[in-house]
Image (cartoon, rainbow, N blue to C red; front, side, top):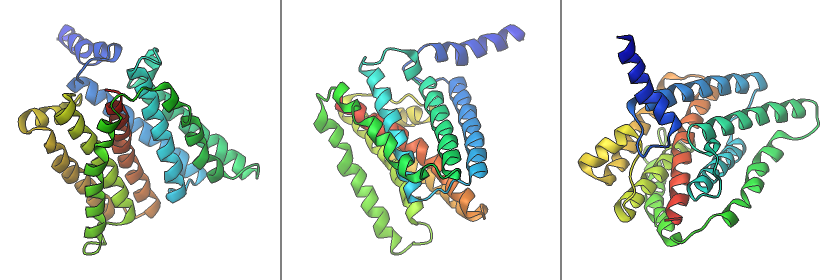
Length: 265
């Protein structure tokens, strides 16, 4: 019994973590889920302690850090960076630790009237991202840009639907849905046009059964249910925005990475 459990842990979690395998295992997926929940818990407490306000300015900076992480991951994909620190989950832990630490430092400095949090927060990730494209190759630039028309169709549709269903299609919900539809659009283009593959367990199974277009209804249904539940059950506005920020991050990170990665095919 003990040997069976040990073999399961080694084959499902330990070995996959040591090797960047083409597909995630169920155990590896569960491990990442626990890791993400730990990140959510730590981040929530930091936000509460320093009264971090999740507004449009904060979202701009947060999105910049996600862009920088996506670009760094593709630098590893293209062989520019060769350390295991730059693949999942090590890169995620590295960036999460850096960003949480930065929030801590910037908020402490702001409380002492040394600087304005948002001024630094909004600009720093984009300044750090500037050199990244110069180290990447883009032989398939058009392929990456193919993602945008598909993505924009959904974004425009959300704003059209907002006229009739404004209670659900708030600006923050549109941002979350758009992040995940960017991921769906990039996944669809990568698999349908460039023979890429999906690493995640459930999407990989569904794509195998129904084709890459299944990512669109999958994302719409799952994310919409999550947003509806948060809007209905979470009364505190700050908590609502925080949980939506976490869901937004899951979609934007993979979407940006996939789109940049397609450009390098």
